[in-house]
Length: 244
Image 1 (cartoon, rainbow, N blue to C red):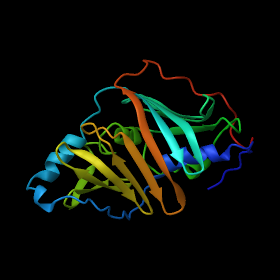
Image 2: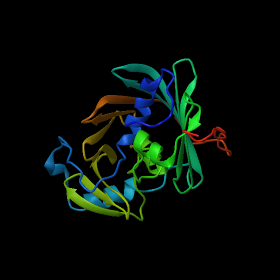
Image 3: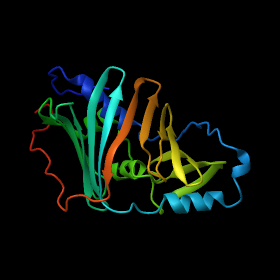
Image 4: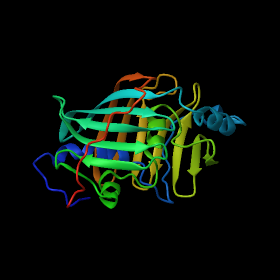
């Protein structure tokens, strides 16, 4: 995936955010993930209980920091600040604090992506191709990071097998794999991409691994999380559109 933005030697640091967000590229075909759980655990009513638990709202606004690592690049940081219904920010930074990419979105999930290395704002089609947003709003990504299904209670949920839930809206589909005691999301899959969620504290994942057919594996490890965020989100950069 490429854009017309100029490069200054840091293209490797863009891949981690692309890999993190690419799992939300939405297609009609989702591939199943092995659960490795005991079928006897799946009692009647598990589906309704899981959906009710994992589609509920997040506790509050969220501020989180993650370590990011791919085989070719380590030491990156991902900062996430989000307020439900208001919007949020995702920032990828180098080990010594210099931000290289910022994504911001509003309450409807409409996203804008800034390549700070190139000094420009990606065009809408470039942003979608570069970071793989697909049609899933970024607030749904935050829900997954916060220990919920990447969906809302108003979306359509269908059982796809023991512990597997298909999620459908007017514009996207995905498959989630859940586990009980307590209820938590352990994987999300799309065509050619899988996100595995591990090291849960209750439903909150402490580690995500993004695996794709055409990309390096990405590990995202939670460093800290608070269920609060500033009343005012950080301002977005004032940069020209790439290619202008």
